[in-house]
Length: 68
Image 1: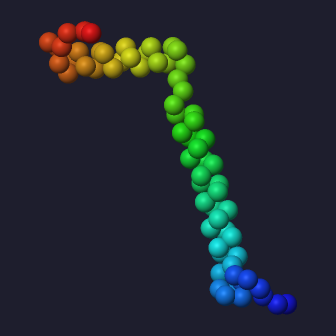
Image 2 (image 1 turned 60 degrees about the horizontal axis):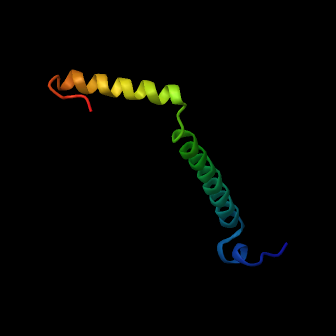
Image 3 (image 1 turned 120 degrees about the vertical axis):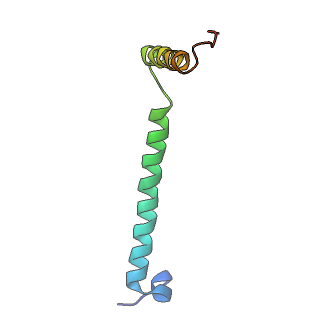
């Protein structure tokens, strides 16, 4: 067997590990993109509940705060 390219420079094991790094980075990037896309979207009812909870917490922490 003859090595060529990066395999010859780094050795066969290092070349395989480099490919694993690229594959791992690609998978991690895909997971992050999926998470960002899912995190930004709430249903209308979920958004309304979140707003009510936020207002209730603000009134609890500062009872003199006027609703806007």
